[in-house]
Length: 118
Image 1 (cartoon, rainbow, N blue to C red):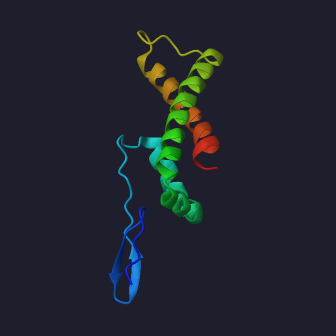
Image 2 (image 1 turned 60 degrees about the vertical axis):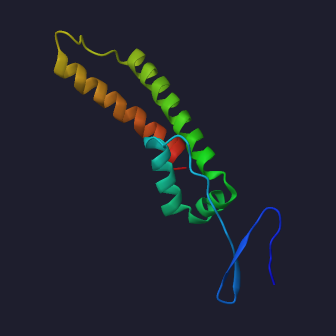
Image 3 (image 1 turned 30 degrees about the vertical axis):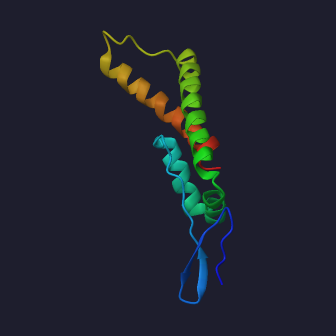
């Protein structure tokens, strides 16, 4: 019994007819936040991860999270710099670097909590 239709093809493995599943490869590689979201879904929400993977919505979701996270990081950094301006970069380089690293860590913590680990 050959179980072919227009949209799916099957292979016989032993006594079973299994569908030939192919996943389209993404054209753009995932960035940091997309990969973090994927890892979170795989480890903590496996049913959702597998459902999204099989119905083709995983990669678009991860790209949306990536873009939103990058945008949110930029906005948050701008807001934090307005609230706590950085020291003069030319005269106090190390203090400037420490200040910016501190703001980036705070902004990233907010983004991770809101977008990645929810």
